[in-house]
Image (cartoon, rainbow, N blue to C red; front, top):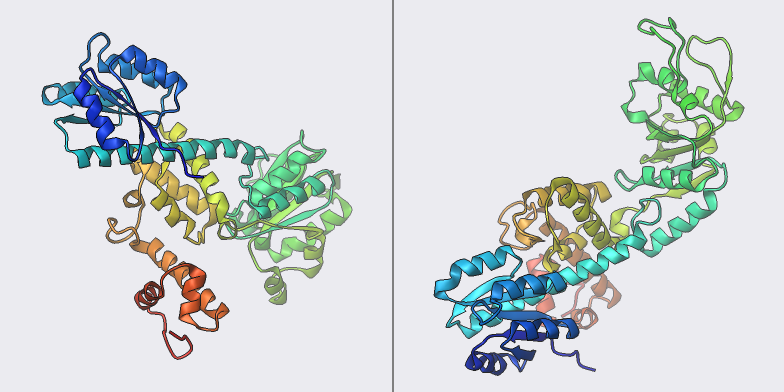
Length: 454
């Protein structure tokens, strides 16, 4: 079944002009015509329009008034103003009111068709972004964790099972992959949800202050201890304590932490009595614990007490289908924060994001989107708006080009391996011409022989 033609409504008081629109556009579009602004508004209420061609000068309501009413009915419906050269100032005013662009009579047919194509591309992109926003409402409903990929759905199921228990959890994963968000989701699903969630970044605490930060101190217990201070364990009593970057904990403190986990009692620095604590402990790390323990940097017994329930944060490169959701989420966030009106990424720009490995994970993507929202002068982010190195007019330039080419090489090599190096069979599997594959392999400096057979 073929897709229906997009509907274009042409509004002009000149009969010849309306006939011209039908003649030049009817092969590709369904063209509706009217000479009345009032009739145009009736049509737009009942017909799913893709675009409006609107003359500025008409009897009765002029084009500016009709434009305002069309935009009230459907703010996302693109309108191209058609005007005589003497009315360019009015056309500029129309663009400020939301018109996509304008052409002057007599217009060049190719120019008008190209303008229509650009307007429809923009409308389609906006519709895709609106769809993604609706999808995002589902995706963000799980305690700020974004994603609907199979890996994330499995993670949500794990949190659902683990959350209501009091078991100790160790969250592992790369930097920027959302380990703290996972810990917070577990806390929100637990019976301690109404109690404190206290975070400790073990990598940011000087070793000399570590014990005081965790367990607190009494007044006069050391130089500078002018008042009693409650430690993070006491502050988290009844709730959840999240020890981020637990692998950075000094060796001297590891034995004390192990004792606290076993006895559920702490002692402040300089204190003389134990203080019972009732909390849930969640830890996180991006280190290789097996290597750390093998080098004597982390106690085996503490590791096993922390790793009762292991949960792995999913790196962004392993769930790239979630990238469009993150893009919409961060665009919306930074639009509000920065008072901007960016609507989305072009298909080409989004494709580059999808082909990148994101070593910095979600945090790197967030920083990139904040940067382009701040710097962009347009409502659609295009390839040239991305902060790439080198010539930005080239869609493949800069660091992302390297990553895209790496992705291409891996894809081509996989197809070759699966077809015993036969280039013709690999090209068929990749659904491209054999000559195109050979050309691309040469451009990527891939070896054509002796293992790969033409």
